[in-house]
Image (cartoon, rainbow, N blue to C red; front, side, top):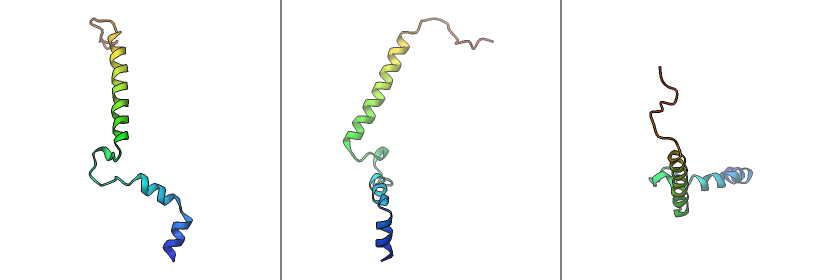
Amino acid sequence: HEAATLAYAHPVFALVDERLSTEGTGLGLGISNTKLTWILVGVTALIWALYFSYSSTLPEGDDDSGLDL
């Protein structure tokens, strides 16, 4: 009776349990869906591409970025 009351009073517990369903299962990065893998790879590739594009526009030379003593 007490468990039913608790489950009825706190329907958020079901949502939290679903979101944390991969915790402690040994899945790499906790990824249980292949779509999440592609999102992770895509965002990482996008950030790397933006950094690479920006760094290629920087001038060449002996610039120490103002760290000269």
